[in-house]
Length: 354
Length: 259
Image (cartoon, rainbow over all chains, first blue to last red; front, side, top):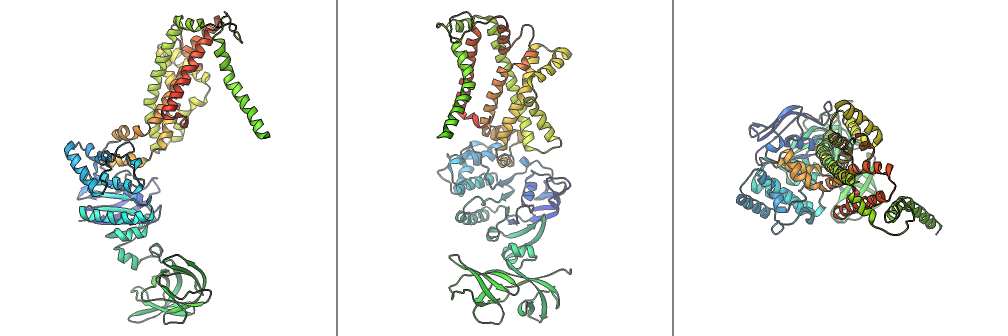
């Protein structure tokens, strides 16, 4: 039996317009699961329902075999970390972290020991007497983490905890959260709209789209094989074109690409003659000046140098595609080029019959 | 140049009409003649002395103070939960309730006073002091509800949820976490409400009765019979008193952004 289980949850702000409908989710003990999706997809609603701030109109929430559905939020022992940090502005760092223990009437010497331990763990030694206003964004989020973890919660919920930090700090904090989670072995549900964040720290990712789970799986799996056009776009398969399965043999599937043909891996549910959508990443393809085996013809429209890489917009008979090249290369300008597809760079999705 | 001259004239006009009357009262209170005159002839502090010797002023002052403090406190205690509910929750009829709580600030004071007179004095026959206290609480509620809701709206709801998730009950988190964060708004609404009650004429006019009068009402009554500078002296004292309260509150916590 999973550690956390949401069963057939229906929840939302308005009674007849639920954001989550028939929603199921499970999480194993010690697992870090990310809920990934654009704003308004229901990820915050999911968290608030688990935390007890929103009552589901249907369904149940089970944690460790106990029904939490009707438990008041202050009796759930679930840790929360917010995007806005939500620190108590008039409390020092120490008192912020100690808050949960004080509410539990823990003896003072135990509080001191536990709080010191947590402050040490998130690396805030020496800042115990500061007020939140005197801390940087990264430090505040560490306080928020310590504050939520000191109560040894049965579950830690994080709602876009890194969105207010700058890019570099965000990447550092990502790995720190992951390290902390592994060290303590705490079960975490992590909500984000940033795919890189979800990919880098999760055991499992749940992609949410307008209240429904689009895809669920390991980061590697979701990154390589998105199961729907929505997930594909979200995972960086920015280019797509309409096509048709022209030929299928034991190893490959040959698809139509305008007047040309390219091949890619087999898909069990795609048969010859099926109408399909093909997706590929800007950095999944190469550019060449001469025709190669698996390529289509195009013309470079614009070139944007971006430091570590260069972005090209290439006009083909199928439309304009974005291509990102990392290595040093002969510079392509407004000239005919060939868009080369390495093995497995194109993913396919069968189009439903119109 | 021309624009700034026009602006200067405008400012002078505004200040003349805003502060001018006060200045006249203030200067007149130092006059030595038996009738209020301007400009005052001679200089004397005897009217200030007389203010303190008139018993009905002293009694009225204490009544006003009691009523102002009591009704302000009640308006705060009632207003805070109302403001909290209006800001935090969505419920049917919310807009209607919001309108009700701002109506005493929109409806003319005389109308409220008259309505309360019908209700308290003629219908229920409440003791005068109690009637005044309840009436003032009613007219102060919109002020406390509005000022406290505006500071609650600026308060990050996540902070309260964090407290609750850490084990605090809603009530506990209100006192430990929310109240300290909105205390400026609470103090501001206290001062605003106190001054409103202390200076109120239209509602008090209907609710005062034999033996009980608030200071503004007592001043009106006095003026019907006497026209010596005592009233001017008392007015000067009240102006200084009010300015002092507002100024020190502004210095301490900067209330102007709430009012």
